Image (cartoon, rainbow, N blue to C red; front, side):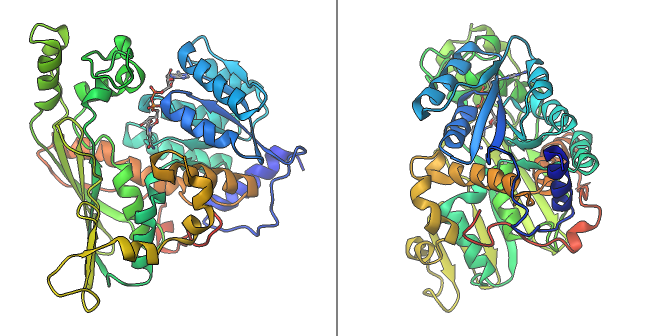
Length: 448
Ligand SMILES: NC(=O)c1ccc[n+]([C@@H]2O[C@H](COP(=O)([O-])OP(=O)(O)OC[C@H]3O[C@@H](n4cnc5c(N)ncnc54)[C@H](O)[C@@H]3O)[C@@H](O)[C@H]2O)c1
């Protein structure tokens, strides 16, 4: 059987919520998975560095449109002692030539949000599995199109949502699964990160706090800031909703049913420009549409509520603001504490540290050492490991295309709600009923 046919067949089984026997191992003559990278900016470089550490994977080609980013990526190959990849560059669509010419099994996409959708669609049209950085598309239709494309092609799409693998979050997942918090009632999370220096960065000192963005910017300042000019909603929901969704067994007997969103006024980005660039700086005239704090509430079929907050334009320390609350107690990450009726003192918080150690996830116990030095406290190791292992073995990825779509579609739904006086909007069911019988395969073992 041709390798591509084999992969398509195995992946098709995956999207139908079926776990294949582990004998369905990957059949490349070299015994290695062959992958390409589209986007070797700051995030792409971290995912690349981790991929280059693996013996079961060859990165044979990379694509980017900025020389500076390609050069940094090439240094990673040298450092890892791996052969230099074929490079595709020169224009925005050079990646298409790479997809057409290269005999690769999968691509990792780490480009600006607006590029994820066309690149993922083109990759699947070219017969490649997709591991894509967070955000699947910008409209609801784009999310449906990706889901349909996986069904049509039998290929897999996994959003590389790394916070699902954060060590404390995985320990709390274990506690949820073992019933310590009782029946889940209400969860909170979000993206609360002062990104002002990232959004205005001239590149002379990375994250050095300029007031430039667009062409004059560096890394995310080149593209991310523009989204804050033209859009208003929760632009980055997946770090919060991903882990919570796994605790709620979304698409394994549960699903999101409706959403409402409300945005505050926008002040932070403008004030930052005036303070750092002066009131006469041309960017001081830019009117930012994105509210400084956007609050979203989601209801599930199981009757739980989820509150998400997007807060990236004001001075504040970083926190994803997790809260996991059930009939027996709750955990919060901000005060690193929990309370469990009958097990901790009544009406008192208890430091969570010892509990998190006791419920440390088997994946972290097995791979904790390998994850040392990987980005974001080690969790980046696990997300790329999960994608590559699943594709290599022809098994369903632990974050499915349905999960990816449901987490990312929060953005266009929230934009709609904000623009419509915080009216409620129904959540699309990308599984078309499959959520009722779907099995939970995320982090069920110490494997991947
Ligand atoms: N999961 C996480 O923790 C995490 C952290 C940071 C960034 N991200 C995500 O990763 C993605 C990339 O972010 P980043 O910080 O690396 O940004 P970046 O600007 O540093 O990198 C993006 C790269 O894409 C390249 N690019 C743009 N258009 C292209 C095209 N048409 N063809 C080929 N290459 C193209 C750019 O030249 C740049 O090198 C975003 O989706 C971002 O949200 C995720």
